[in-house]
Length: 172
Image 1 (cartoon, rainbow, N blue to C red):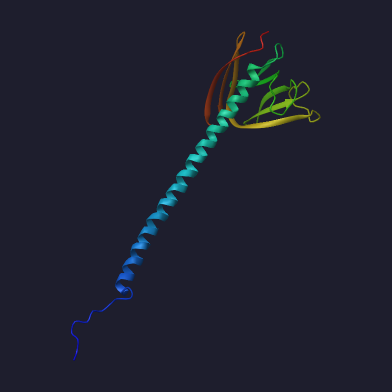
Image 2 (image 1 turned 60 degrees about the horizontal axis):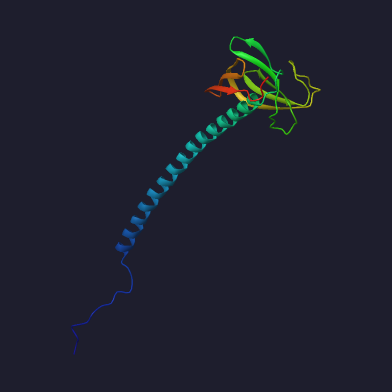
């Protein structure tokens, strides 16, 4: 006698089910890859912007500390061109760990340089002087205006306009 009420148990997936799951997984992986690529582009873009902002803020801080802590009577300003000044002074601020360094801001070949030395600086800079030089980047304009206790610094540095009013803390 034949039992007609047999039930079949499935032990695996059919080929069609397997192909559909692979196709769905491929689509999900494609969207995840595109999202990751977009995220990496965004991180690069905003990382570069943040780096430029950090550089600008670091330079502003150096300007502020140099000019606000300037030693009375040590400031000289030379007009090189209509839009460019060359500045020499002594300050109590040092980024290279010197005690009361002499500082010069000089523009050469379109770059603004900050020179720091233990001895008084003059232009042209002597190769025999022990000094550290920092390159602040491309500059089109570097002007400093001064009244009794304030400096007004105007520069277009690395395609960013800076206008900073700095009060001299060490009074003359």
